Amino acid sequence: MIKGLAITPPVLGRISIGRVIEKNGKRLPEKDDQFTITSQIQNKDGWVKHPLDEQLRAKAPNQKLRSIPVRMIFNDPDLNLRAEYTMFDRQTGRPICVGDGETCQRLTNQGIEQHVCPSPDLCPLAQGGHCKPYGRLHVNLDESDEFGTFIFRTTGFNSIRTLAARLSYYHAASNGLLSCLPLQLTLRGKSTTQSYRQPVYYVDLTLRDGIQLQSAIQMAQEIDQQSKVIGFKQEALDQKARQGFANGLFDMDIEEGLEMVDEFYQGEGLNQRAVEQNAFDIQQRLKGSVTALN
Image 1 (spheres, rainbow, N blue to C red):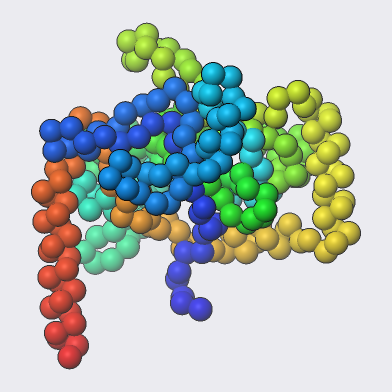
Image 2 (image 1 turned 45 degrees about the horizontal axis):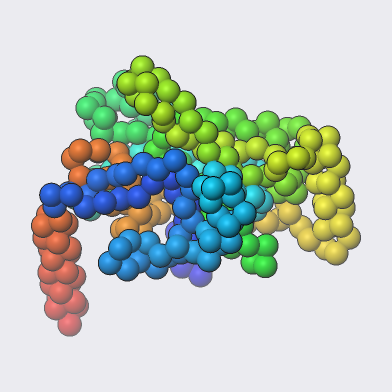
């Protein structure tokens, strides 16, 4: 096995509450008041919707998808939701500094260096909104693929804080049986002075409709016992995931990075010509490396 390779949960699709549009040569985020479930395939109109989107939307009131039944893959809350302070390179969409509020890993010309992370408000490098929270939540929607996940990515502090709180509370209340609980993602709205009284939407995690906490915990205990009887090892699964994530601080594909840049720097979307030029420069450097090797 390749050393230092980040092993993350297989991604079958994406969950979003908005999309990216192109306007005047810039890629800009456009928010929505409902969930959209997409595949990993794009066409000229954007990301292609996953079949689950239509199935769940048909059951939703007015076909507005504002709740999605989910299951957590892991019992450890930090394995289901990864959240860090992240600063992106605006040209490439790659993370160049990732921290947790205490320490950070920073990509420099000398390699990856470790520094103190005082949080974006106090970090000289992060001034001007260059560094923000970045969260990635992995959930299972298709139970025919037990380890396949759909990923919800967000730079919204409301979503990150709410999801982190819910995961830790449900983990504690169920005595660590987070992966056995019947949960759902729920879209909520709130207005603030910063939003000029306009609704801001964020993602919450709750028990599925009609299920009380006591019943959910009882269901989780039964599922856990049945799994142990057939030899399923949840603790071993969590440990493997923990080892795989250890190299994942700078794990990001180019499309994910560019979309995060679009959301981070709203109104300052990447110029398409600059992206194309950067891709050309990378290709030229790769050609030079191959020539040198030959």
